[in-house]
Length: 119
Image (cartoon, rainbow, N blue to C red; front, side):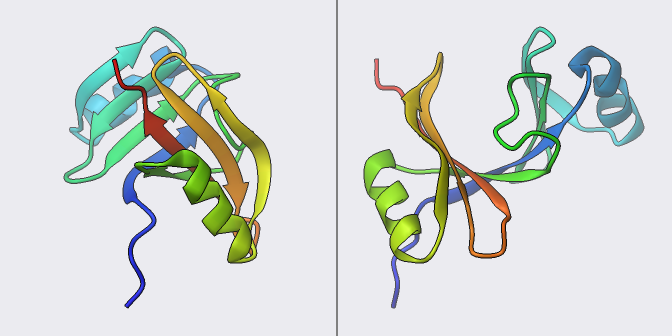
């Protein structure tokens, strides 16, 4: 049996403005805001999965919806994705809250891999 690469934690949706998009998801869909970083990013509780709204410049895949996978070892996860036929779009780099990399699966679906920073 194959061991999971990580945990599918997010569905990342690109938006032109987090502030403008947030009322629809919060009020219209009834999702609870768990975290918001101004107009850069918002994380909403979607029942076991986070619906992330990514503002301009924060989305790992431009204008495409992406999967966000939390991993324990980013470098090992990227190597495993490449070995399985995926490609690296953005190599591992450190952000404000995590180390992250963006890959594409064999069909071109964006996958944002992230490893939380340890303080």
